[in-house]
Image (cartoon, rainbow, N blue to C red; front, side, top):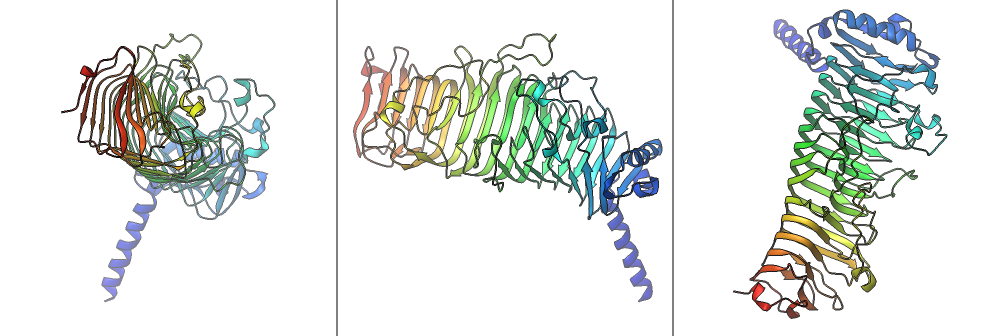
Length: 538
């Protein structure tokens, strides 16, 4: 019995050690560097920067784990080298110094849009391998103590440190830690490979630009089981350099943001490829105050390509959205911002092959509506929206329905930039091969705008779609200079005057099949110069 007890206890201890210290390197199991052994006081008042740096330097010589035991550690910037694991125990609090002079300036070799102004971070690494930050402790950047002295770009971003900035690193793990109160973005991973993020908790409402996480030009990324509540964008994928963000899977997270909960862009120089995001709850922030955006958020999902690059192979599924102004926003524009002054001028990007499925959105806070828009001559292509249910706020007027939507090709891609759109559900322009399948849209307050407007669009399919329609609306569906339109098994949720209105001399190739629109007075109306021959009702 004693032998069995010893054997089982040893096995339990061994497994516990393995779980606590995954093998980034063998040295991490055998070599521990407690920051207190190097002189750290841990009272939250005495600066511990030099002691902590000594522990990191010693660890870097042969690899291992830098250990933060319970206590409060006030520190400036620390650099991680290869084979360094940081473990922050429960009860340990790392406080970022409020003095910018305690932070080194790090300008990475890789050129990116951030070079000029984002030079400081609490934890920094460049071209390191097998590094990690883990544990049940807390990192607090004390970001509210960094005062912004100007709103002039880009100077307003300067002298505000990240919590984490890793550049061109390989085999990176960030696990279980709590991060709060950064002075800038909470964490940026720029051009990293094999990045694993699990179980982190982020609360970032201390300063402007308080993103949760920025995955920027990284390859082979797995992120799961995270909770974030931020003033600025939450789950943010960027491409601020020539590196593409690709092969990314993100799942099982709860996100809150006063701005955009799930976002690709704004910067898109390298682009985005092979991205899957699933099982996400988007809910209003718990923060009673805001710096940017809206209390319940600006958008649930934003895909914004305006600085060149390519976006393709993106799948977003099983998303519950509660509260923002706009549920879904997709934009291909042409701001064409260089990622550094001498870089070549980017051309218009490519936006194609996107699937959004199994999305429910309620408590939408504005009458703006959703949108999928390219620019003249450059279409968004191959977008499928499947199993979508959205309850909009409503409230659109006849004046809103008649609104002309400016192109704004070179504008920042924000879902609110046009104000209230002329369609309450989806406004689709400069788009090709767009499918709405099993989509149900409705509104809380009366709204006289069409449910859908398609302008300069082709290869449009609406299958098993249903929509509220006010008795005074111009039409449930409106098509302008659009072609190859297939509307099958559409169901209107209310009685109105007109089902579909077709205008523009380039409108043609319309198929209407099996539509449950008996409560609508007229099936279609044609604009000047259009013949009934363009419509097939068989």
